[in-house]
Image 1 (cartoon, rainbow, N blue to C red):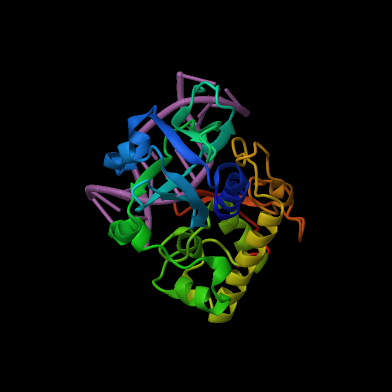
Image 2 (image 1 turned 120 degrees about the vertical axis):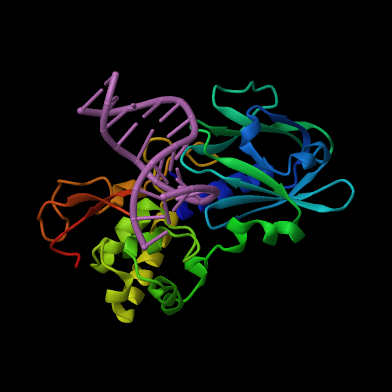
Length: 279
DNA sequence: TCCTCCCTGTTC
DNA sequence: GAACAGGGAGGA
């Protein structure tokens, strides 16, 4: 389940394999994977992949079209979306949803970029950069947690009155956290996932924001967390799952106090926390 | 603000 | 053969 550190890792591993390659063909194997901008599909041949970057949990390809205009391919991997660059002769796999054929700048075939997605929740949108703001999801995304002071993130979390975990998961509050990093940062900050944001002091919300930043940074250093499906664009698993204090550990002893961790459902998500250490 | 649904492979 | 995994849209 790619969250911010996993998408960051995917983008970093994809970059050297696709940047400055030319798209020589496109194959849409599952129509619904292209969520918007189908009309641009025919313009893609000859486009150069000018850049790769991340915003929230989106992986973005900046494309330079042959007519000189710019286009963005925005991919949301959701739970099971994966990129992989295969040799030019590779054939689609069972769950391959979208393929870009790539060549180098001298038109020599360089490979095929597969977007594979078992559960088909992932998508790609083709958009003009100047039209991005018309996409509601994009326009309402909250700040990047690693590029924003913790006090500012705390103020975002404080707005409204809901379970703190629900605020952490809300991409319009801050962008990039998912179930894993929400649970891990709540544990690190000693805050119960069900605590109402209005009842948590600004100081503790700041500690939560700092804990989130720390856990995201550490996970990026370890190339993300691999639960089941996740692989980066080089086919490698991450290692941060070995550092989980609570995620997936319901019933096991708390690493801090030894009491059994409790499982629950909060904000519609499986949640694990320590009733002793998190108040 | 909260709940349901989408989807398929894995686990019990 | 059912429960479960979960981001985000959409509806209550």
